[in-house]
Amino acid sequence: MTNHSPPTLEFSAYRLSHLPRPLKIMLTGVLILLSGGLAAAVGHHYYAYRNADADPSLSYEDLRIALTGDFPPVPDTSVETTLLWQQVHGEMKQYLPRRNDFAIINAWLLRGHAEATYDWPWTIVGDRAVPAQALNAPPGQAPVATQGAVRKSPAEIFGESCVPCHNPGGERSNSPLTGYAAVSQYLTHPDPPPTRPVTTVAQVTRIAHAHWLTLPVLALLLAGFFYFADWPPGSPAGRAAITVLPVACLIVDAAGGWLALTIAPLAVVTVAARVGFLLTVAIQIVGTLGGIWQAQDSQKASA
Ligand code: HEC
Image (cartoon, rainbow, N blue to C red; front, side, top):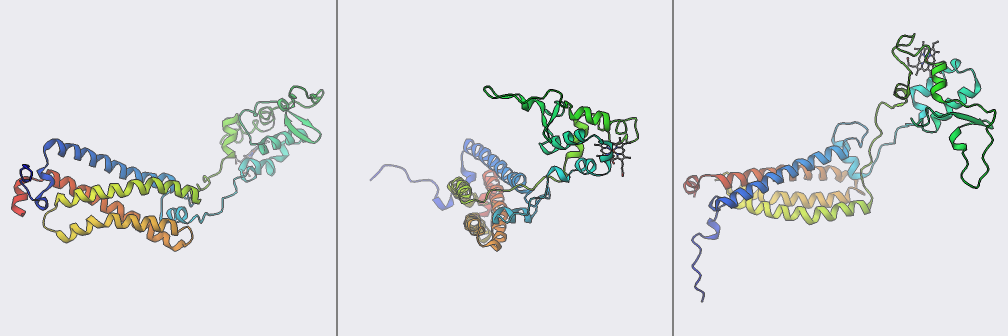
């Protein structure tokens, strides 16, 4: 019927090592990029989830929390838990004997202890301390009278009341309070608050559409190449298993990921499937590269 000449090789005998060199080089480049993508996927798990349990290293617990939405309680990071607040309200309160000074420091701390308002003059309105700038009334509104009122910045108060001891040459040379940077060291919390990975249906749907439309295509192509790479030679059962496993892991991962939101124990299955996908795809990439570049002679010997 047609005058096409028949292929010189049977389909089942075709191997990646028969590809012309440019295709081999191109495929190798694709596989190197894919390996980078896999490493980035691991890196993404590290950065996105490592702090889900408020401990900065990545563990199963982080992934379990991310998959189930079973978040730990957020630790109290309010200003009241900082060392500066506790000292100002405790032993160091004696060094702020003037009510207004104490009120200004207190209000500065409660209003977020911003660097911008550290040098601002603050004033007392009624029994509240407020940044004096805040009293510059917007157009059309009567300005609040501040004549005769206190005008003092947190910087001045720390300088007068605390720096005499808390300075590099003073009694508390180890804890200077000589500027905003020094003061704010006593306003930090030892541990960063835990991150809260996405677990709402809308967010999981967004991630699913990107993953389910790309990963199966990747699995299909890689498995096809791996199967025809025929490397390492001589283990058909192993090759068959590695060909099928990534897509099987993807299905378990996808289903488990959704179900774990309501059936928490499925998180372990999902994590195992994700690790399985990673390992088997890595084997496929190595096998494909080996198949592309194996010598034609060893091919014939094993055939
Ligand atoms: C007369 C000296 C003196 C003054 C003035 C003083 N402190 Fe202290 N401060 C100390 C000493 C002494 C300690 C150590 C107390 C302890 O370990 O029980 C300390 C401890 C602290 C600490 C804990 C860190 C550390 O060095 O152990 C902070 C924070 C602190 N002071 C803040 C302040 C603030 C804010 C002021 C001003 C309102 C102030 N201090 C004024 C002597 C002073």
